[in-house]
Length: 158
Image (cartoon, rainbow, N blue to C red; front, side):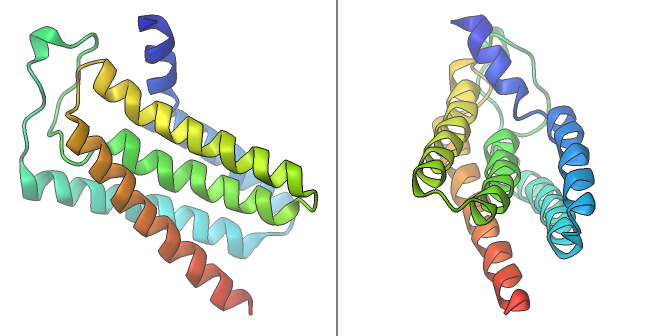
């Protein structure tokens, strides 16, 4: 199970998000979805800035590193993996959801995205690098930012 959790946590690493984000940007650009591409970039950059400001503001220490299955540095609150996975995978889900017409495809997409985001957050607690409160805060604040950007994007499109 440790290997599975390490793999899942890598799906929330900044390297994965940047790499997949570049692929997503190229696809959005080629589909002539420049407004969506712009919102995607702004959401990710502002999410990263807000996450780091919150970490500096709260200065919450991580759980005991000697008990962790992987090594992490920096402050714990909020969980950056939980925070950024909501924004990143949530925005991707939104873009794909809007492009699909089949109801069941939309339902499966939403469920898969929710499960992925949950597992990324869960992996952080499982691996011993975050408290559950860090992860829940990451999900909630990331969710608020995701909702903000989706509402703004919808209002501009109208």
